[in-house]
Amino acid sequence: MLVGSAVLLALDTRPAAAQDLNRARRTIEHLASRRLHGRGYVRQGERRAADFIRQRFKQLGLQPLAPGYFQPFTLDVNTFPGQLRLRAGNHALQAGADFIAEPSSGAAAVNGVPVYLDSLIYNDEQAGQRFLATPLQGRILVLRQRDAERLRTLPTVFAEHVQQAAVRLTLVSGKLTASLSSTVAPQAQLQVLASKWPQLQPEQSVSVQVQAQLRTAYPTQNVVGFLPGTAQPDSFLVLTAHYDHLGQMGRRAYFPGANDNASGTAMLLELAAYYAQPEHRPRCSVAFLAFGAEEAGLVGSRYFVKHPLLPLERIRFLLNLDLAGTGQTGATVVNGRIHEAEYRQLVRLNDAGHYLPELAPRGRAANSDHYPFSEAGVPAFFLYTRGTPTHYHDVYDRARTLPLTGFAGLFRLVVAYCQVLSRTP
Ligand SMILES: [Zn+2]
Image (cartoon, rainbow, N blue to C red; front, side, top):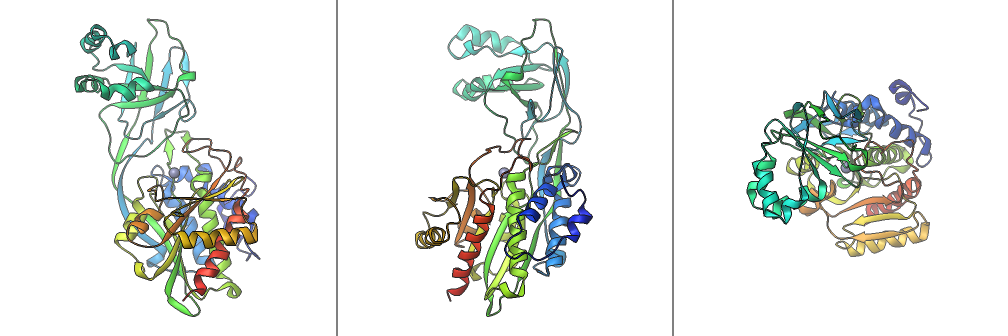
């Protein structure tokens, strides 16, 4: 990282002519850095990110939509703040890279010879009976992802038996993709890359240590500001991006979330910097909503829609930015098939300005923070860039490898579209 401290970042508030790609890159590097702990619920990562965004809103002269720019709310979330260790024979596997905890994994500290689930149980009754007769209490069960998935094709007694194990260890052949849960299971549940799982001798043991902590009513926040319009201040364009991510997993591993969604947050801040300049002040008001707890199930945006800080019926349009860090092949527009006239307008602007190589429409999808607004009748698009790398919800979604190919183009497209939207009465 080039600029190492929050102090330096804080001083860098020169207004940019359009968007400032270097500043955006530094914003992403900061948000995705280890110091923010993956912007989750261990070591107050989400709060550190929220404080940073609030500071920028303030420096830019945005008006707060709530006291101190924070709209507080709470959530239940399972976390992995402490030990997370897996050893198979002589091999120590690395948390984050070689294995992850499943979202609702519970805690465990177990050492022993593992039990392998025999794939024969799916078509051989005797194998099934043998498996059911094997005691699993206090033991580590190893099974392949495919077998884990088709457990529900068997009588429920099999799934219940699997739950008896102290640890369920699923060997995954593709990539590891982490997520969050609001509940915790009595069993430790790990996903391990099959390619990293060693061939063990029959007597070799496996040791698992997982600390899991369910945080109930964890206090977090949306960061909310706006710029009043020059002609129609009671009419709003709303720009949104979630700033939270998956946090830490064990003591060392964390999820940087550079593309998801430090990139969209940086875009939101660049748009705020642009509209804060007197010559760019829009005719109608523009609200900037940085949502928390998106990764936990759109918790922040759902909360906002239930407790709106501006009248939802006064929103002309909402643009949600999530995954803004690639773009070699353009961007996808969720709800593009719903708001067809608006989508055609967006494509016309893109064709005229050559902002992005291509736009592609999608129907409705509950995949980001536009969704609770859409469901409440607010017209909204969710724009995400398409391209490489495709790291997603893993420890490789880093700032260093994020190309930002479509960042400037997407910025200009959003500004062009907002200009059209702010003109229509
Ligand atoms: Zn995500």
